[in-house]
Image 1 (cartoon, rainbow, N blue to C red):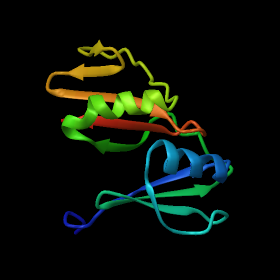
Image 2: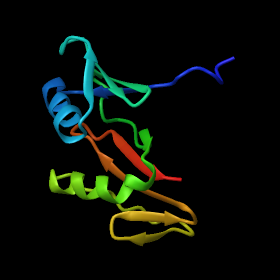
Image 3: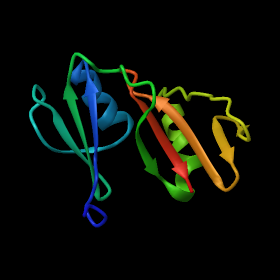
Length: 125
């Protein structure tokens, strides 16, 4: 039923202006539509990311959105670090670390948080 349909992330934030700065200037997403009070829809590849204000922002303790960035992982990590992004480090069975990158066999991944604590992921499968 949904296998050929696109899926997008929906992220709750407390401060829409801080979120706008992070998603546009730090992550480089392009605003597609929306007013800043009701939410902002961003384009990311063929996907969409909706950022909207909510009192429940930052309450999710799991990964909220992820991007498969392929061979660009290391470059993107360095670019984000230069913009002040701090990466999370998780200790998981069978996982090693190369700097900020978690290595799980062929998969390599990083996690970081937006200003409201939403956990975001970049990976190379």
